[in-house]
Amino acid sequence: MIPRKLESIVTEALNKRKAIIIMGPRQVGKSTLLKSLFGEKSDVLWINGDEPDIRSIFDNATSTSLKAHIGDRRFVVIDEAQRINDIGINLKLIIDNMPGVQLVATGSSSFDLANKINEPLTGRKFEYRMFPLSFGEMVSHTSLLEEKRLLKHRMVYGYYPDVVMDSGNEREILNNLASSYLFKDILSFDKIQKSEQLVRLLQCLALQIGSQVSYNELGQQVGLDSKTVEKYIGLLEKCYIIFRLTSFSRNLRNELKKSRKIYFYDNGIRNAILGNYSLVENRMPAEIGALWENFAVAERMKRNAYEKAYCNSWFWRSKEQQEIDYIEEADGKISAFEFKWNPTKKVSAPSSFSREYDSSFSVINPENIESFLL
Image (cartoon, rainbow, N blue to C red; front, side, top):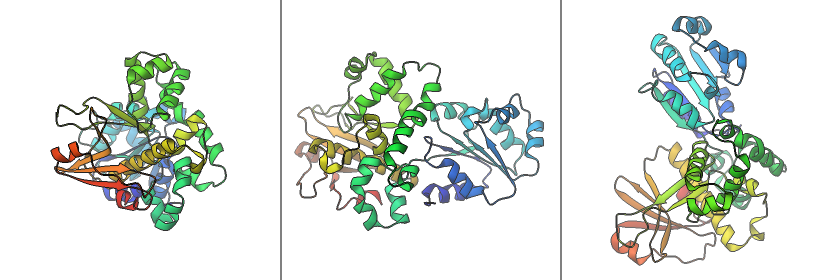
């Protein structure tokens, strides 16, 4: 098994009288992580929220009935917790009435699970996100040299654990992920009925990574109004399929203030949605650049989450079409980054940005990617 960064983080959070909530998309290794953490322990109650008879235990449960089911176990591990009715109330009953019990719950759809737990578990939980494997995790598992050699492969097939572990079957695995698991949660949401338009929306987004997106234009392409497009994008983001960056601005007159770019958490999923697994060297330069940018930004998001790097993230663009791919602000310090696949490409910060902001500026390419992701 490839060691996951979240394992040490969760281990440190145990036995602090708070529930531990792990959220992320399906098939990223949440169940495997639980088995690694608790598989050797004898005092664990394992609960799978996908099983109907298990879910019935929590229907109209009381602290007395829950105590009877838990018995003298020290750990209660609930996988796919979003499937259990009133999960937040049930977790609160256990935390408040059984202080010696450590609760750990996972969920694959944050818009569902988070809504059920936020109010009941206020002040009673640690919440973490789990992603597909990261560049940093793979460097620790193999080596920096090996992972840099595989950059072209990762840009096409991504980092889902099954994809990484089953070399030669990447396309079959990704096609299965994109056609079944990917939409299982969002299509179960009772207001999402137009699955064909949802798929078409994802295809349009996949073709625009690294570019500004317009909800109006997307709506015209897929046959939806702009408000529905925005709602669907919000749900896709909460299911950890995509994420948004908004534009950085300090209210200068020449800056774009309401623009947005959308990225995929995994390059392999992006390419599976388009059915395009072409080698990097067989793609047009613009697409290679977009894939590299998506890879770098998504891996930075994983890195920041696991390292607890508290910062704000944006891109920057002016009305004169000057731009910077990615900006972070942490503790009042601004850092600007440009992503270039070609290491010989010379780039400097736009003069209008440099005049207005005290910021560092770095160009991230395959030769120095570790400085950005480790």
